Length: 134
Image (cartoon, rainbow, N blue to C red; front, side, top):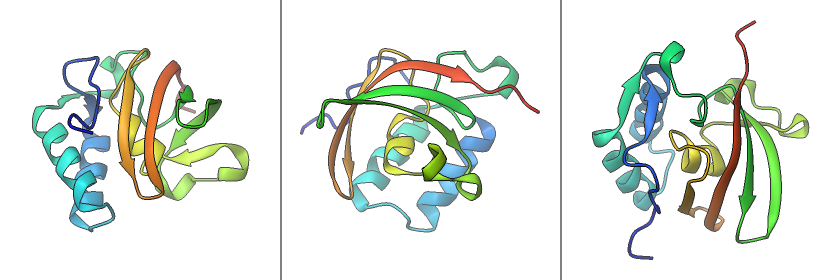
């Protein structure tokens, strides 16, 4: 896998909060060396925006994402949440999970290849919706 992430969009787009969350995740050594290398490079070129101007089709915290796992052929819809609000039994998955960290900042239509801890992932983002703030 020469190019780990197939980048359909130029650079990832993150809210400042998500950017800081990922930086902290790397700093705490919660990722593999390969993931750290990819994430560090992505953060260098990432566009940081305020939540209110984040494009509607960008994967972020509090977004409902439908994606296809090309490795298993399965489609899945999950809500990406902050690490402390994760409830996998209710399809609320941490943005710092393998799938979340792979797709965060990418948009509908992007296909991402990611060297996850439990085996490489190939994920296609089919649909993104943002939850409204309560």
